[in-house]
Image (cartoon, rainbow, N blue to C red):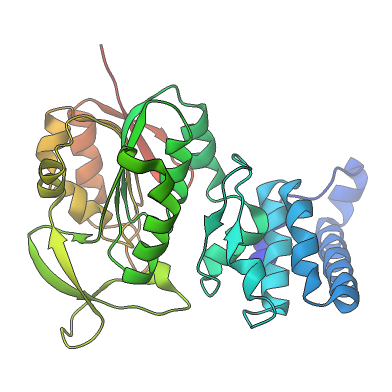
Length: 308
């Protein structure tokens, strides 16, 4: 379960003799205490526990907050009485902004309780002095687009294929006016039209569907095409989250890396099956040959263009 994984390595400090003699027992006790505490509060407050938990979880490190949030999500699934708790959230890094969320999506529900997504990438983007254009491939509800737009002198091109996600994306980005361009399409190796699967409870796992009679019909464009159509020159940050198709999308746009048009690149190395893409090593060698250096392996890979 997610909360057990999140507590791995998160125990409070203890005397070395205790850690050496019974590390598994100590970890088990911590987990059981948390489970019992959450259960007791949930029994007393019922669904109001979710409202109570939001400000508290904001104060915790992301791993511990996610562990407790996953317990609460399991205990209180989406229903008429819990919908409101999962439908919106202020992010930790901008309390004046309220995201609209899909209350059925597990990842959105985790964000609804913790106020944070992918802390490593979040920290890197917030602390970066970079400005300019951010291209958000697989933007979902717009978390990273809004984060980037919270800094001055920034623009966003946000791309999302799934209609339900795209509606949330446009709703969350509309206040930024002409600093934003949103496009509903999927990116691939060639232009055309495809069908994409859609599960209301797991919209982040949508993918191209081989049976054209099912799923949502979506326009497909290449990355080069969409940059040209939207008159994007230099891309300060390119984030690609395409559910296992990242390497194919990026490999099909080699000219933008050869021409040094992308300053920083984030992408997922895994395929749909959770394995490293067979073309990953070749693509990473291509990036290195064109002046890009790997700067982070935590979560998504991050490559930075090295300038002389």
